[in-house]
Length: 263
Image (cartoon, rainbow, N blue to C red; front, side, top):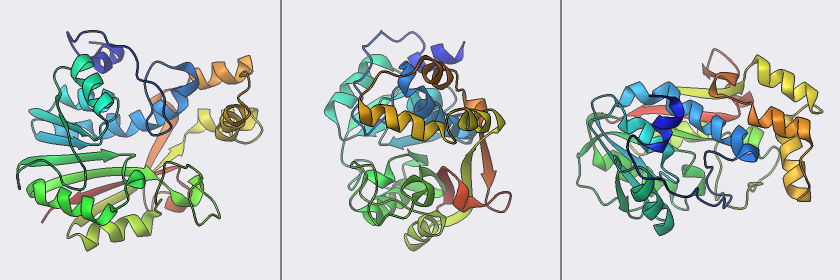
């Protein structure tokens, strides 16, 4: 099975791509490909931690990640508050047990799953502590919470409020660790997502930052230059590096990833 077939869902019916809202990224859109791959890389690197386990993806959005996990897990529950996302996942990814619900009050029994996946979601939540406490509740003893989020230091540099209007509170590595430990988790590792050599070269090619070049096009609502669009469309998960704190300066990372265990 190819990677694209994995993301579509084996044997699943076709469904129209979801519209971009600013709160989620979706596959199959050239202009969105950089952000999609930057999200996808964390799923790809951690999917084996879900092998043979009961998994909840809390805030699964378009559903491509939950479907990827479903390729190795025993059972995958997808959860989202957006009813249109719920309908889309049910139509496009039938091997995901998709449910509608609020992340602040997870509709699962206590100690009912082995892994909770929460990628690029915590920054959208108003009561982050309540959500993390709910993750602890639904995990079995020894269960794992996998959480990623934009690094506040590099995503909204020098600002007290997030640049992204859909974000409520962004975190740095210390704040993310404190959030998890205060809820009762043991943090086993904090990692950062970085541009690899090819993306570093693309940064140089586009005035120092391929991210800023994309944002400038979006803000101007202008046609993308052909070379920028081609470079963005060419990005793959292999263009990103994932380093643990200590291997690289975690404060320089693009996104943060924490692996936390329920004692």
